[in-house]
Image 1 (cartoon, rainbow, N blue to C red):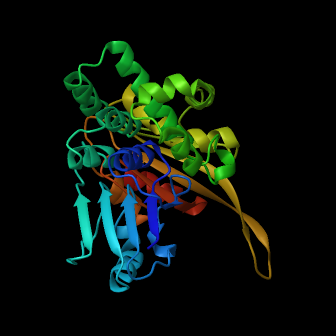
Image 2 (image 1 turned 180 degrees about the vertical axis):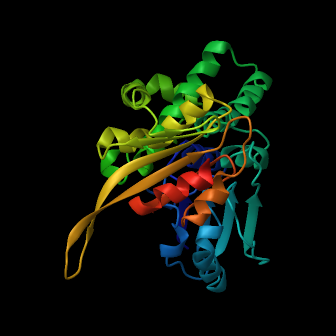
Length: 324
């Protein structure tokens, strides 16, 4: 029977699947996309006896596809740390859900596998910007400062690669990046053997981040800031990890990163409309509320980090009022 591996296109999703398939190898069709492509299960037409693994995408956003799969006789393994909604009580569903602010799917899989490929879990944690937890795991793994720095750099760079309006914005489509990294039991081997990939990602991140940090907030207060990025490739790539970096630099301040884009509106008066992709980061010292705000504007995420796929220009004032 066919197997499907569905995973988020960021560091957490990729590293989760790497761990799982190193421990439980099997051939599967890969279903993924840019980080914001999260309704992956809703578009999959599986049949009785098929096996689906879902990693690092919100169960709440995939309830329709999940129920359809289970009702069709599909076996589903689901691990995630985002909003879940109601978790179906079904014998064909194995769910590993933990929505705590200090975890990620990579760590959930690490726990499931009893630490079998912990270094990849640490990469996932650094990629999701839960650095304190990643540091604790690195300490327990007896990693040197240099090794810890390498895993953090890789995690941030892999996470950065997942952002964009489409895969054309990315250096590597997430499925390709997974295939490049999946053969390596240790991320240190991947860094060494695929130095070309590591260099492309880390240099791209450094260049784009420098541009992003030079953009001043359009609105700010003691506890919040709003940054607007232009409708350019580099800006779409840096939108999420810029929020992480700002959260690290200003741990008592929440951040909203708005990425401008133009949408073609068809109809009698065909025109282009300015809208925004939004990345929300709660204050590092108070990891709550990001998902609550995002949901009000049709988005989703987790307590510390969330996103909105389509914000109208007329909604910016409302978002700021909620945000600040």
